[in-house]
Structure formats: C-alpha cells, structure tokens
Amino acid sequence: MSLSHHQELHVIQRSGWLRAAVLGANDGIISVTSLIMGMAASGASSQTLLVTCIAGLISGATSMAAGEYISVKSQEDIEKSDLRFEATELEKNPHAELKELTEIYISRGLKPELAHEVATQLTEHDALGAHARDEIGIHENTAANPIQAALSSAASFSCGAVLPMLAILLSPSSWVARSVLITGIVSLALLGALSSYFARTSMLKGSLRITLWGILAMAFSSWVGSLFHVTAI
Image 1 (cartoon, helix red, strand yellow):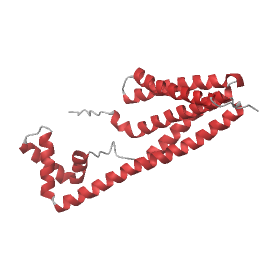
Image 2 (image 1 turned 60 degrees about the vertical axis):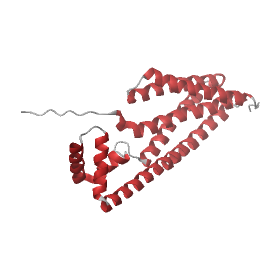
Image 3 (image 1 turned 180 degrees about the vertical axis):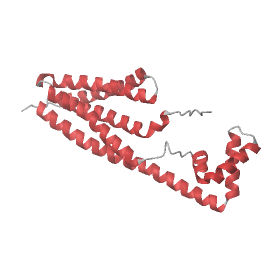
Image 4 (image 1 turned 90 degrees about the vertical axis):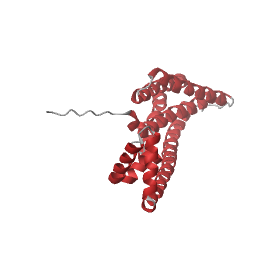
C-alpha cells in the first residue's frame, strides 16, 4: 500500500524576499525615473541625465541595502530577545508555561483535556519552538533575515534603476524624457502584475496600485523640476 504525500506550498514562505524585492524594484523605478523626469523638466542635457541616473542607482541601492538590513536586524534582535526571555521562563516556571500554552489552545477551540495533552506533547518535543510559534508568533517561514532582505533590496533596486538608464542610452536626445516616462510606467505596471502573480492576488489591482503611485511621483518631480531653468551645455 503506497502512501501519497500531500505537500502544499503557501505564499507566506515568500514574504521575506518578495517584500524586499518588490520594495526595492518599485523604489528603483519610481525614485530614479522621478529624479530623471525632474532633471529633464529643468532643461538638463542628456549627459547630465545619464550621470544623474548612475548616481541615483549607486546611492539608492546602497541606501536600500543599509536601511533594509538595519530595519530587519532590529526585528531579528527583538525576536531573539523574546526567545531568550521565553527560554528563561521555561526553565524557571515550566508548569506555568505549560498552563499558558494549554490556555492558548483552549482559546483556539480545543477542549481543555485535549489542549492539555497537545501542550504537553509539544512541550516534550520542543518547548521553546511551541511557545515561539503559538505564544510569540515567531515562525521559521516569517522570521527576520537581514542579510537576505538587504541583498534582495539592493539587487532589485539596481534592476529597477537600470531601466530608465537604458531608456536614456537608447533614445535620441529629443526623446529622452518621453522614453524615460514610458519606460517607467510600463515597468511599474509589469512589476505590479509580477508581484501579484507571486502573491496569488489580483494582477490588475497590483499593477494599477503601483503604477498610479509612480505616475503621481513622476508628475510631482516634473513639476518641481520645471520651476528651475537649466541651460544645457
């Protein structure tokens, strides 16, 4: 008699890298494209726009990596602190912790006798893991990973920022601003659809959400840039 293995892959397992990747790519496209649009509206030359784009890519990717690492590292520190505290409580008050775990399972719908049995068996198997998961809410699929988040953000920001750079390099001088704008809008639409696909949500809603915010940022940057008048050399 053969046993079938039913294995489910839930999208929550992608939350760590997907959040950082989408945030990085979105920021790379919007911030660099908006920067270029603002500079273009001020009258800057194509060469100036290219240098600005490169500077924006380098500084943005570095900033994203550092910011994401610090943010997620802080979350990781909090999780480790809670786990150390819980480990101490398990050593000092094992009976109180067992009762606490039992009450958690009762509140979730188990009968008291069954809840106590489940809590006892899980405590014998891995007491700290049971409390981390069911009392604190820390799970291996959603635990903080600062290195992964930093690298994902930096790489995705760079990928997003490269797109307006390519638009500058491949477009004639008279079409640079329009090419960057079109590239930015199309890139944001595709990014929104792609991230929604991985998250198993509406691709249309995800695409519209990111694209509309990007257009607003570009429009505002263009307006600010138009307030300045730079003589192209």
